Image 1 (tube, one colour):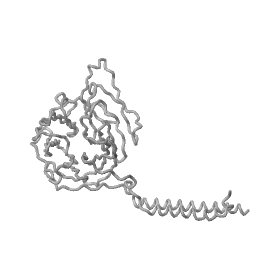
Image 2 (cartoon, rainbow, N blue to C red):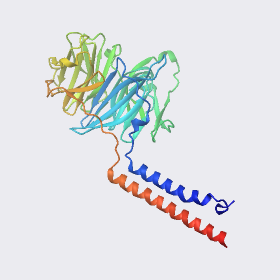
Image 3 (tube, one colour):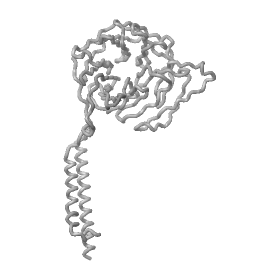
Image 4 (cartoon, rainbow, N blue to C red):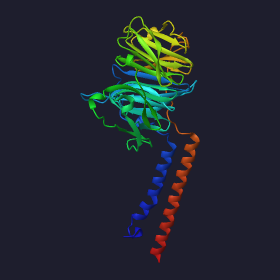
Length: 396
């Protein structure tokens, strides 16, 4: 049945396009709703959240781990923000679903190690899944040297027991090589024990660098960073003595030891400018900083002053550029205390800025609105031309 043959058809055809056009124009004039408003109500902050921080010469990242959802098995997500140094605005890089346990850098992007041993690479280009780290068991250390990503893990036969080659990965959100581990079968499996190895991520694959020195292979805790372009390793058995080693021309050199007082419950190594640094935290929450220049011994411990208001807060310590930063997470709020290159306070405690959301540029939005309005006009003109043709045919 043609449109003119029904009495009500002309009225319906006359009003409906204008209603559609009006709805489109109203939608264009309304401000865009933020993405967060389209999600369900967020779950309350967990009672024991955690926070991580990592910095390089020109970038600084903070990751906050939160639990979400119900059920007997807890689930975690990691919220990541980034700042361009020396004083850029904070940007929200999004959410990684999983529990982050360590941060490092991979060629300018953030490398996030998750509690299940997998890792994600996050940057302006988006999120991708990194290739599996060769070996078995827990990844014992995760760090960067001159923007190259390193890891320590037990590998059968050490660095000589594993080779890698890049393969296509279908699990990434953007093109990213993965790694297939090819292990040459040993003649006698019993002669190839698990050996701790330092591995480096380069050109989309993990390669062996060096076996961990025998003096450090039985340690209980490990930390990895860079001293210039050299991997710097810190190890300890019980926290009373922390031994350090640097990899120079393929061989490990003993870089001395520090003795935290009280005994360290946690520690880490990092680099600020041309200084190597080692921090330790005791069970009561006190923290100390040790500094070292190449060719010199570790300095005497420098107590790090903690703002009284942040007692009991979750903490993360990092180097950003030439300074040190302590991030606190308490009552769902992030705050930061900065320290200079000697470990002395640099300014006062400050609440961290809210990251910028991805708001559309006003000019782009105007152009977009004009373009859609033009499309509506074309639709209306086309409709009335077709209607006129149909009416003319009916008259004939």
